[in-house]
Length: 266
Image (cartoon, rainbow, N blue to C red):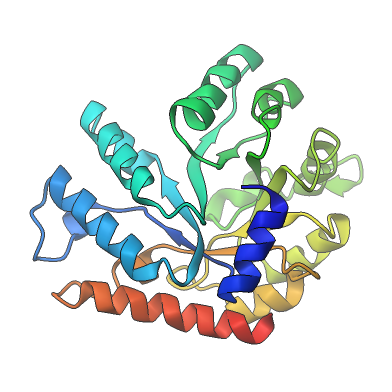
């Protein structure tokens, strides 16, 4: 999915919601067996319930990789159920020396039909370059995250700027607004405003709204551009809106609520 296709979906659905499929077997509603089939069936039903409101889905690969070969297969089944008109994100946070990154890029962009992958830029350009060489695919680079330890490195000063600012400026030289996004936590609204000044036209993937305490209004006010330029992710707030038999209706209602608020900003 290229940038214009993504913008079209945002305008068509009047939403910039990304639904996160960070599914935990132990949190499945009671109507599901706590096994792989239960997990896949739950994911499919969540996707069906939220597809009218979601322009993207983010699969956190760790939640599936923990189960080995079987978990990888459950992830593939989930991936293949995603609607063709949504951006399919592998939240895998890869980033390694060039030849290893080439293998990761083939895994997620050729073997698996993901449209985008999250990456860690610490090892430099050659670790990201193999992902950037794929046409109509996206590299989503970690920039300023919401976790407690973000300050250990990201806020450090480097050549007169914070490290995350240098990361953004440098990575932008390797790609373009057509194939690069950046991860910016929703709990950092003030910093996001400053980031938007650095990259006015790039898309930002924003986790942290809902269960993590980020404000949709604040992050949109700080970072929306002419094309909206945001994908705001909600995972737990949608997945576990209810643990009962009404889980599907509750997930749909939560996604609809977020999308309805998003529509007021578009």
